[in-house]
Length: 484
Image (cartoon, rainbow, N blue to C red; front, top):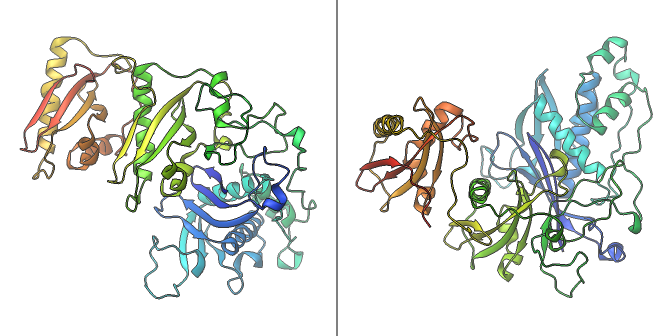
């Protein structure tokens, strides 16, 4: 069984993929499976579109390098473990107090990064990190070491730096920047000064009957709380928390199919419509490789009220086998960065990755009635008329060039009382596919610094339907509601 572990921070995410050693996991089939054989490691850094990738040698070198460099950075005592380019795939160099260079030799350099050559043996890849990015990388490593079910035999071997590399005076101790960077960072700072012995990085292995809480979510209301294992179960993915020494002792929920009977389901059409959009906006940009699908991949998703994807289940056999061709494993929420999900309501969605490269997202049970736009609205007819004209003039002036689409692009666009665009939403598939041919992304970027829709504004808004026609004609009319 393929197993994935994700350790995520705002500026860094570690994704590990591997297998479980059946000889070691035979007695723990009902618990969170142990990832004991690492097949692939990916390190995603903010500002870079492609991850650093490699096998076990790359991952172990990354762990040693970042830990050694963090020790050096916090103590101002040189640590040769961070700069061993002769025997390590990964090394670090300090540029200045807020810039740090991550150097990756051949194995870890993916094709997506600029390498400057196409030779079979690529030159070292150099990536500059800010201190915030560095500490997020350190924290991601901390999360890994706190996870007793992932590569349990791999331990952090930090060696105290002898005083001959630099005296650890009180002045140096004061230079160790205070930052909430996790267990290993605090450990390396202390070890650098020979102040405390290396701490035990892993909590004791829990016994089967003492398994801690797992925050998985159900996707089937009729499923029992303790499903009977079958010979060929449909793989189900659920967000699971990183085990910590302070984990709770509530009974574990072992299956996505077990929980919906114990939590409310989101069925309000307006809320489902808003969440539908959030799910699409998460998956659509993350699905980068859209070729090679022989069959549509269909999944059932569980989504929390804030849009976090808390679980997914393959609906057809092709989806079982092709989950690696989708971004779903990378989009599961990380309990380390969000309050634990307990009795939160869950919405269910049907997500289809089609062979034509089109993403389809819809509520699992459909809409019970026509959804409405949430939030306060501007309803005065004179104000709405004036804002209609102002929006038309703004969009018309910004829309130029010959359209390449052959069907109407339909959007819901909202503006505030000053006529400033506050929200927009594609209403048909072609509007999703060709949105960059409209001025809407640029208008958003100019106001919010992003091409995606801003959060719902609490002030009243006027809503309009905006249609970009293949002929170049623009139509804007007051919003009459979603069409079913």
